[in-house]
Image (cartoon, rainbow over all chains, first blue to last red; front, side, top):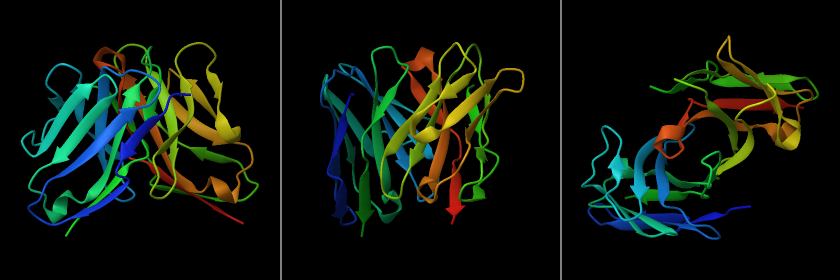
Length: 115
Length: 114
């Protein structure tokens, strides 16, 4: 089946620094990818839709200048958390749809801790 | 707007007993409905989906779900629970008009005791 990877799986950074998270579709192309944020034992909150060749679409309430999304190629989307703060600490998960949009393939997630 | 509700934050079941995790949805048009499971500090694992056809959908690990259009429900069931089924379960609906993005329910923590 289709595989989506994320890198890194776990990162610690200091307040005020930026951190980049990569999401790759390993064996299929994805013109669209989705970024979710999850707090412990809570649901996944959709942050934005990453579109290859165009700007990302952000959900209401998500700061686009803080969470920079770049869909660099048909297999790679990146999420950069800029000027990170402790409240940005969370589990970030990406996904990519299959060709018919009947399935979503999820990455394993990235645990971000901001100290 | 599409939405999904999981009315129970937690479900407790004894091993060997049947389990049900509830999900109701609100969508315009015909829904794509999904169940995912998440183990601690892990990504989501796909369990099953309803796209069209038979209302009873069978999925991974012995799970099944019944699509009920009149009650707008898609409850997850398993005839005999295992301790290893203990995890966080999410129901989701897909917005086909927006590239298949998923809207998730709040999640239900399933605890199966021996």
